[in-house]
Length: 562
Ligand code: SF4
Image 1 (tube, rainbow, N blue to C red):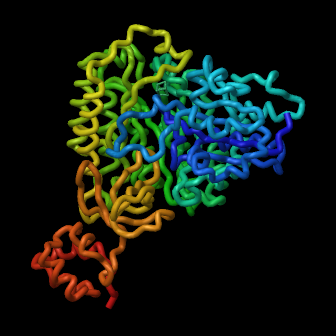
Image 2 (spheres, protein in one colour; image 1 turned 90 degrees about the horizontal axis):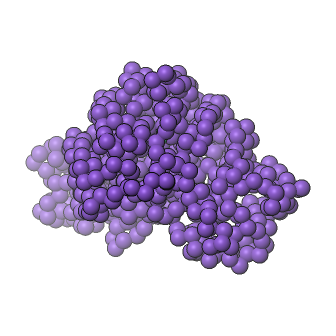
Image 3 (cartoon, protein in one colour; image 1 turned 180 degrees about the vertical axis):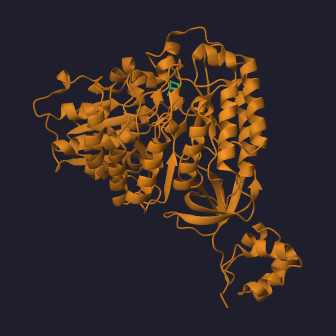
């Protein structure tokens, strides 16, 4: 099929292992563009998100599209509880909403992504699309754009190979410049492999990774070439995406576990620093707790490499799934409760507590509800374990979702799953007793947090977030252009939210309202400050009897040097 102009609509993916909701740009939309450009480097590929469509930003570019790919997630599969006590900034749109914006385009429309996988039986009729791709959108695009091919003879279940990933990745990187978050706020996920290295024991009852029967690791050089290209194009943040980062290049053992390869991971992480030194952030996405608990020495080596080469505020998802061992056994989840606890302790010890600003590394526990053998006890066990870990500062928080069963997984066929009574109340308890506690421990007043982006204006303040997986959301006071990253300094914690001011403060222009947020700034001191507007640090420190208190408040300002 010939197509001079292809539209790739990104409806985001927020499922387990899905890194597609802004600020992330997922692999498949990029790879699909790569497949198009491999066929014809001069063809036009237009990328549009739901925000672009709602704002009519690219309307004039879409009109004469020859072919539309819609990559869509499932809204109900998104986590209900997230580590920061904020509503997610961007969420999966209702698919009908998205299709309403492109219905007028008179060309073939192809639906792909997790929505197609989960709702293949109804999607075609419901949205009037020409094909529903249950395989990989990028490989389907490659096959369809063959001049001799037509929609009727391309297999919608076709999957990309390792060679396809390599071939599509470099040209596909070119799509990132069209993302609304480009350049500063955008974070590109870079795939290391897919499939489950730990699935020799059968794989988890709910997990779609079991569909990839063999695990093929992308060679380090191949990953580095893509990262180099992404960085060269101006994207400043990446997340290394895989079901378990620690398992990159691991090999299965006879007892159903894996043998890790710390050397391969060191080579990868050191290589990133070499080929893309301009990156502002490098984070990892997911970890299987059993892999850490079974291999403590190798896991510590990997954590050392992560601490040395990745950015701070690295909060990967730890696939605990449940702390209820009966649920673990019946669903073959990654780890027992004891293994999950051990993994968290190992990581806490290796990461240490020394830091300036946000912690360098903390795991974010992922829970899934809707599994076999769940009952009230499951909720109690999960809450007890996590509350204790939150109090000890061992975790970044918890992310919890209700399972939307994927056709073809064992859980899909079960009709005996009992709903935990008052699951809604339990989700609230996770927010209040776990995430709120974790959030309050992330940073103390006076600590500096860098690479923060404002995304919504409030009256006199803005909502902002860090980049990377499981980002920290804050209320930030002070002026901000909202376009580029900024440094902020924490002033306190209120209503389950960290509060901060934009840095540095300018003594000649700072307002009373901002001064009231700073630690140690009483009304008397503010009156004195406003009278003299001290421009030198020694003058400012005269407001304080306690020099420690004075220096802490002074750290918020940029004073004259002499
Ligand atoms: S351990 Fe389970 S959840 Fe993790 S990738 Fe394997 S099958 Fe999926």
